[in-house]
Length: 75
Image 1: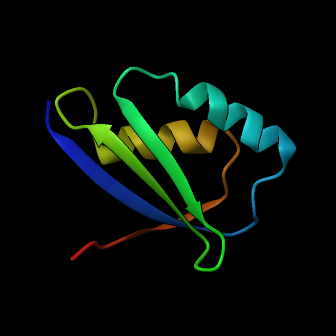
Image 2: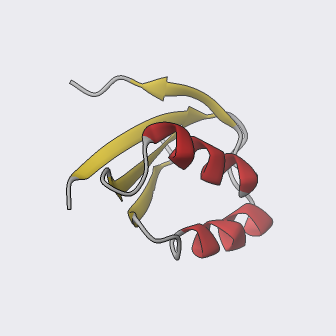
């Protein structure tokens, strides 16, 4: 298992519908943790890189209704 984090900026804060959809996204095999930083308008996902990649994570978040804007470069 190779754990990586990916961080995205989002526009509109997630509402109840999106939050419920994210609960289902946490059940996707390979997604380990999803956290929000409301102040910075970012969402961080820890995932198993042997199972998926950042593009697949972005697709999962978009299907959940998250208004993704851009990927944040981690240093």
